[in-house]
Image 1 (tube, rainbow, N blue to C red):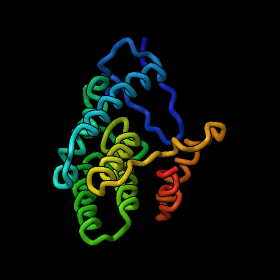
Image 2: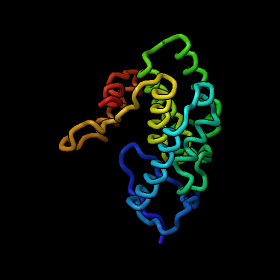
Image 3: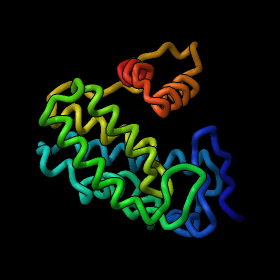
Image 4: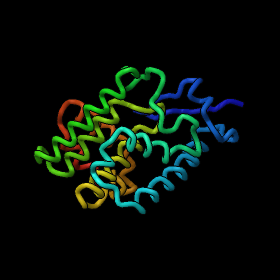
Length: 198
C-alpha cells in the first residue's frame, strides 16, 4: 500500500523519489504523516527552547538546515537536505544555496541597519525563505519556526502565535494565512505581520 496524500492549497506535493525517503513505513495517509511530523516538530521546538543561540549561529546555512533536520529527522531520510527536484513552488533547485546565502546576508544588513522593526525582519525572513522553498516538505512550518527563533533569540521578544489566538469558530486560519502570504508576495507585509501576532 502506497502513501496516500491529499494536499491543501499552498502545499507542495511530494514526488515519488521523495516519498521513498519516508522512515516510518506504517504511515499510509496524510493524517498519519501529519501526526508523526507534529511529534518530531515538537521535539525540535523543545531543542530550540533549551538553548541560547546567538545571531552569528542562527543566520547561517548550516543552522537553517539543522532546524529542518531536527523537525523531520524521525520521519524523512532527506530532512535537512535541499530538495533535489523542481516543485510547483520555489526557485530552481540549483539556485537554493545561493539564494539562501543572499537572504542571510540581507537579514544581517536589516538587523545592523534597523531597516525594519524586529517583527518585520523576522516575518520578511519567513516569507523569503518559504519562497525559496529549500526543502521537499515542511517549508512553511520550518519558516515559521525560523521566524520564532529569530524574534526570540536575536531580538528577545515573544515568539509569534501564527493565528493560534484566532477564535476556533472562525475556521479560516489557513485561508487567512494563504491570503497574507499572497499579499506579501506583492510586497504588502501588513496582513502577514497581523497574522503572525494573531
